[in-house]
Length: 209
Image (cartoon, rainbow, N blue to C red; front, side):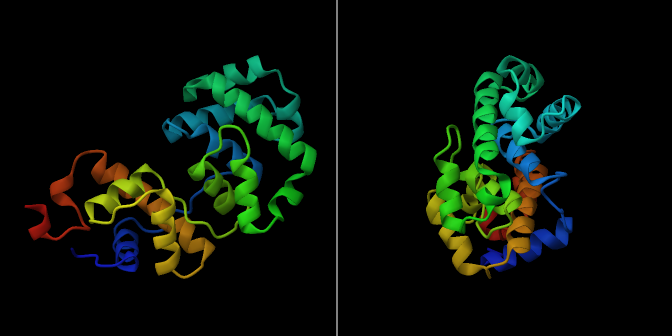
């Protein structure tokens, strides 16, 4: 293995792709919306749905919470599972509207994570995306790309185990967590998604045979 630790993996990815400056959003609540919409769909679909919501003035908790669910369904239809996602967005918006964005995000990291997990339709990845990218608190996001790449590197484990590994080996740095996760996504889309396994930058020639 060329990259015998997670820091080396990060440096290899950064050298290949450069800084990603992820997550693209104008507001923290837009990040929350994107984190819900991106479940089981491509980001281009999320961008279209967010654009649709923006045109209708529904990128704020109060307006989204009060919006007709059927309208939300229509606007996020392009993301798939649109009925589930519309209902979840409506409920999450109500939660943020009731408590206030600043009050939600001012909670300690672990409490914020637990609060997000208590919301309908929010799992580990979505919760951690909100914690890291919307609230700017240190939680490393593990997604299917990360699991796949780690498996190829001989590192196995469930979501929590992999998260603990990253957070143990890396310095606690919000910008680093964001950049690393974004680089993994970009690498997986460029190499793994296109089955360019023979060109893998992270595995030694011997390991490819």
